[in-house]
Image (cartoon, rainbow, N blue to C red; front, side):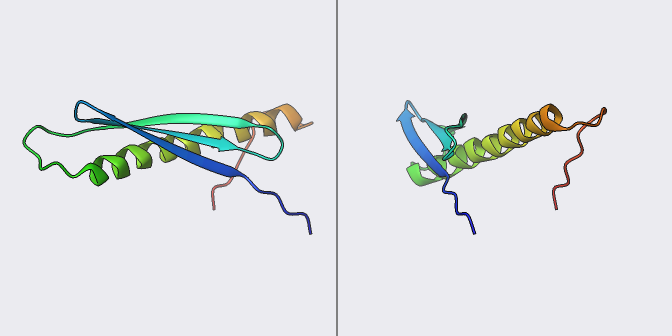
Length: 91
């Protein structure tokens, strides 16, 4: 069995009622993907920073997942000897 380890770091930044999360995926093969998610506090909402952190992180990770899928489709197309569109199942 071969084991691989990938790391995802999430960095959070807050300024002026906005939270920005940057999710960074690093693979053991040297690939790096990044995606940013943002959240904004409504001025009428209570100040609960964790909510902005959660929402911005969720958006960054969801975007990162889509970016990884796009990269996978590109890799399959680049390495598929048969012509046509790459088909990837998500189940």
